[in-house]
Amino acid sequence: MKFVMVLALLLAFGAQASVDLKLNDKKMNLGELTQARGMRLQETLMLTRTAATPAKVKVKFSHKYKGLVCMRWVMRGNPFPDHYPRYSDYDRYRSYERYCMRYAEKVLTVQKSIKLNFKDAAMLSKVEVETFEITIDQERFKRADLDYEAKVISSKHDYKVKSRGRRFEFDLK
Image (cartoon, rainbow, N blue to C red; front, side):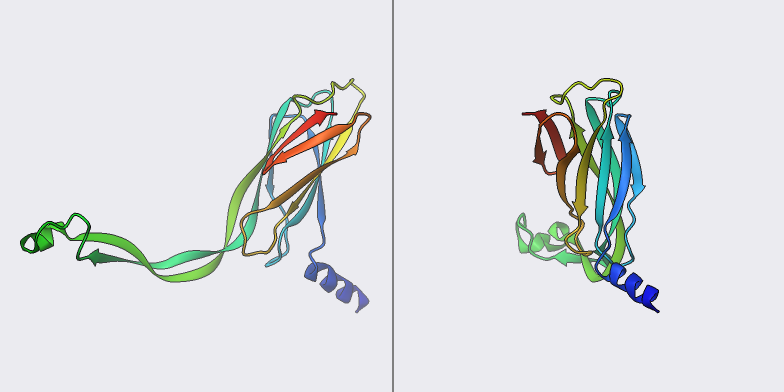
């Protein structure tokens, strides 16, 4: 019974998951990030940089959110468009537009990517390893946008992390 209570609390407060990723390709795909059904996404990416890591890395992933989808489209006419010249030409100049009559909430999947720039980072020896952490947070399940935060976990060098949305630059201080 205690196990069920602990599991319920973890699911209710969105236990943060962690993904370990060794950066050894220019483009990497994580697939769909795990999140409990109906819960917001909270994920931590542990990135390992080695001497074989390219200067620029693009990490792709997808996640779920609840969005509005049109369930019924109709065409409706605009009897007086801007280019309406005279009443005698009424039918010829009538314009139509597509209009949504009914919306519904649906769970959707969206693709996202993070771009990492190590161009101004320190050159590493073959045995040297650096670890960075990127935290991904979805404010609420009904929001497709994500918040990102990056920081250095372990390195012999001091870095200044510049973040511009989904782009991160790791520069030496």
